[in-house]
Length: 531
Length: 88
Figure (tube, each protein chain N blue to C red):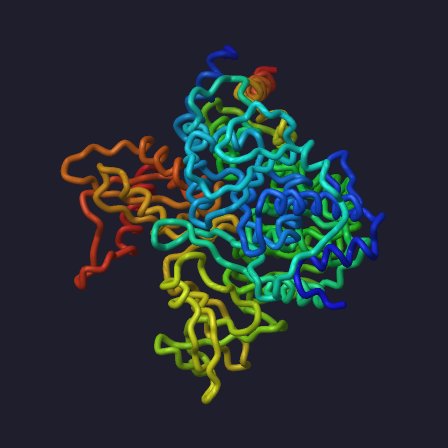
């Protein structure tokens, strides 16, 4: 039977491969039957405390087998899982829990201790689940469900009535209006993405997947779902180890992994730290890149170190569950990494101009996605949804709902597509989407800041990071350390400006618009002077 | 160089340059930095670069493991090991 809902995929895996390994972390090896029981117990407990189909359940805990089982459990209960950045500041987490009116929170004891003081007594939570904790001295304004109670639930599987178009997941991402926004993903879009990825990769139950991506990232859907779809084994990298690429390489060699789905910079760091020396990657057969644009030099270096491996670049986006995989030629040769495709899947791509009309060959326009992979919208933001999801006429007489990615793309003479840049300021830092305006909004919340401008900046050692130019209000004095700490209380670490430059004014063009180029040249001059 | 002097300088660096560390009320030398989520990947690289430049040492890639960054004490001991290698 074809899966209609995401949990059907786990149901199928446990029927076919109950005794095979589902997930391995450190010394723990969990079979599909055991993993399914973990997920079911979470689902039954959620339902017991009043979580209903269509509800949202937030997941805020370090990566673990329990955390991944909870994702499946939430969906089995008919709710949507809302994965939150395990390292994000607590104020941001509390904001998201309230924004999506989560009826459940699955977290760790340490995280709950941080959250409790700022979580209001009037909160939407029907319960807080602590799947790794047994202690009960914790205080919370909602019922606490610890590991013992979860364990006592019935492991007999069950399903709830949902439609393929029902909400499966809300993916929070940087928002251009100053607060994170929730992308609502339906079950059928996740299933489309899984099925088309499988058509390219042909994963088998013998595969072993890397599990390197943080759970809150949209890219993690590969690890979480593709392993189960194939009946394969997932090897989540423990969070503390993920910071040490050389150690990760040792782990992947020892565990004989066959599929890595990673941001390319991790492999570059691995190579730089000697992680490819003395390790055996002969079991590896597929490496997929995601999350960030890789330079040609990096990809070539990786390709040369892994001559037996099939390498794939990937074009994807959060608002539409596409994963356009492109296999790199072997032997590795000069290719244009900006090219998107070949395109296969239950979607189409169109390049439209500012008036939503198709562009001609050789012309640049915005990339639109059409098909059954689209998000349902942004949670609680009908106006932004209406701007992003619109009816367009990509071909004469054919009106369809599309999503505008904001990526600028050239339609090539041969019908192919080439990525040119962004129509807005959005950037990606190590796989995370960043809207500079969200950081600017955080900076201008400080009383001493009149105006702020945020840019990406490439650092030879540290990679891409953000820097800010600020203008003081009246004659207020600006302390860089205080501003960075303020940002760290509101934003994830990768969005905190690495440097903040104080200027008397933001440069403007004659039409009054901010002159980003002039502002950037100005701060780059300062850096040159300093060295 | 004394261990406690190195510890103080690393503590000052973390408080001034690593946003997640600056958020902690009082950062002690035995706080479990990795469990507390003090580092993301760029803070990790920045910390390595700081130690190399500030103490004029080279941190070998064998040291890039959880044990060397578990706490301020562990980082300081790693710095002293590197200093010892220089004077040896």
